[in-house]
Image 1 (cartoon, rainbow, N blue to C red):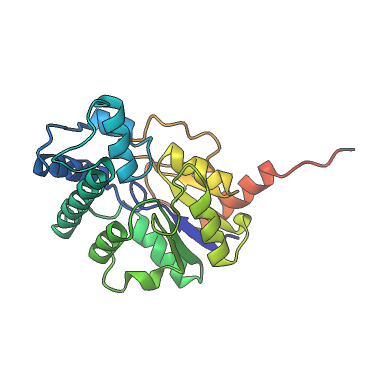
Image 2: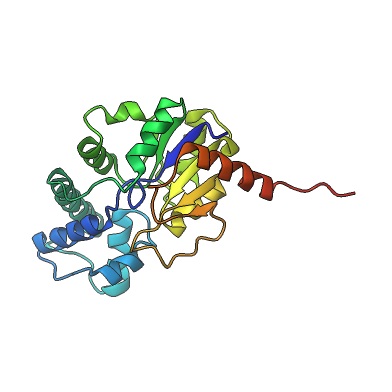
Length: 246
């Protein structure tokens, strides 16, 4: 029986990517850049975990000739762009542009009522997490989660499993006592590298990803409850357990 559920944030708890993409474009415009990320390009850029890393990858891939913008060095420019993007995203969330995905809050409430711990394992910033969950869950949202891992505590981004290893340690639980929830191939690679059985709920941005090794791939969590998760988890662990030889 799973003793903890560990959730990714962007794309998993909430379908945030359209708001993130718009916020990046607002930051570029404010900074005087003619860069624009459409949905197709942004879906490709999601292969790069982390907002600053995404900007840097785009910059160096598409505009390698650019060294400075407005007299600022590269790192200063990246930091300022990311600050502007974060502010734009937080403003959009506060205006109600993002909501939790279907079934998420119901499953969270059920888990808490049955003593199952909750954790967050994400590569996004603490500011982004707080903006989203304060708006969608309430001011006391931190009380819902036993442990929270984010970009500030796990600097090595997904698909590296650092953030999941940190959450398992914080929960004081083995991987086979937990279930992870992700929406992308990078997230799945991160969770499975830490030994976690993983439920995938893709978004429009990640539908084409490779989800080999997932415990379940579902459109959302609307029809999911703890009883089903326990059954799927037991079957999944049983299927991957080494078989005795005679």
